[in-house]
Image (cartoon, rainbow over all chains, first blue to last red; front, side):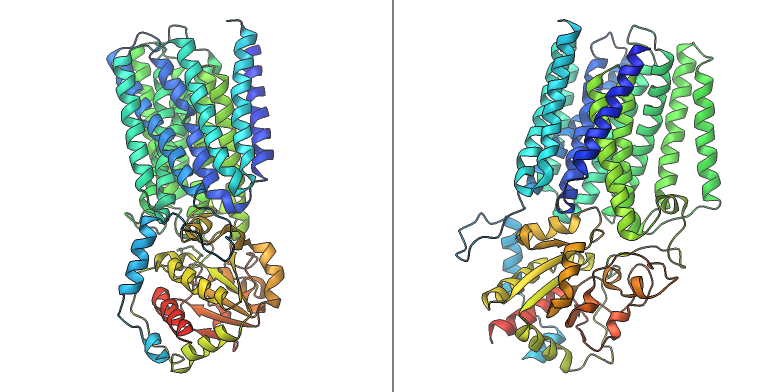
Length: 127
Length: 471
């Protein structure tokens, strides 16, 4: 029983702390926030690893292995994509544009903008 | 190692995790916050291995490597417009892991018999994990447009959900009277199957504009499932991390509901805001059609728009999901740079539900090189809109529909909007003048101070920019 109380206390305390901290995250960062917390929920990998600390039959071993794969995917994928996202957010730079690292997709987009010679009706009106 | 030491180490890891989340107050801090949280999880895995040993490395190492490699590969290749689908898919991967771990632990192979509390939480973990998995897969399918994003309603949908839930509860109760391993296994398998069904049926009815609510809710259930899984294996770290995620998901769910003036219960029991059953807000969404030449579309709107752009000093851009669909964000940035070169100020007004998940529009614009200090939240920019010379609406409809505040009884009545109609002049670059997801006609379109530029937003903006550059 003291164990149960302790676990409930851990749940309540971290939920409360999480709640207080996350209400202060600006909506600007809500997507990376969700992506990161999603990666945090992959902490289940601990449980999956613990399965193997005991003797496992074929069924337990297989299910455990699938759980490890899923959790590892969630963990690594979640943090890597959050990393990419938070690095997209940049502050305004002073007038002289620095030779910033250009995203490859952005360059492709630029190229398409220049090469695009089809004109819409609005373009026609402007000429 | 004494219990006190173990407790202290766990607390230290949690402190690192909390420090990581705390850093998410600013975009600069978030870079380190993400790394800090990742470090906390690495520590958690390390202490688990230290306490329980790396048993059966011939299975574990390939499994960890395979999962990590695929996760990394998918994460570096995903397009920013596909982030919502990716995140939904990740919720599913987390859900399936929780369900499987709970299943194995419930079989009682861990040596010690499972306590009643352990059994109950294990079954909650199993059911919630499986339901999250099914719901997330469906959400990922809808968000990536591999499946129709519209809500699908079964006959007697609520009854089906209720029956599924009752069956799961009954099966869970039955387990306590069974101690034969094989029978337990069959029962647990059946619970898992019904939970998958429950998650699927639950998610299929939610679509269109309600997707940000669904994805946030799945975030919360994935965390909650992990916390319950932590109770059965009696692991503090798992409980704590799960609780944090559950808190985050709950907050985001609440924020999304508030931004759409929807009650969570209405989203879930299928009370759609629009008469047609198809709910939704956000922008001109649907198959791309050739620009309709509406009667208003004469020589003048484009020239009028050009004149307005040249005359304006302070401009605000209102982007909607239609902008992302038209891939117009890069064209907007070109225009923004040109306007700034001419000494004008350009700001972006972001409605909380713009995009397919909370905050999605910010990521899309950040990717297109819009500095984040030009992105403004609804309440902040609404104060400035009456003083704004020109608002440029790109692919957004319902979020600027004054009917939300002026008219009673429409599906969007009461929804907070960006007050574009209060600005001195407005240009609308939408695909067409049809109503948005909500099905409510946008009165803004008929306002005399509004210039409608219908058609592909990307082309429209490029042409405007070209005309601005050439003088």
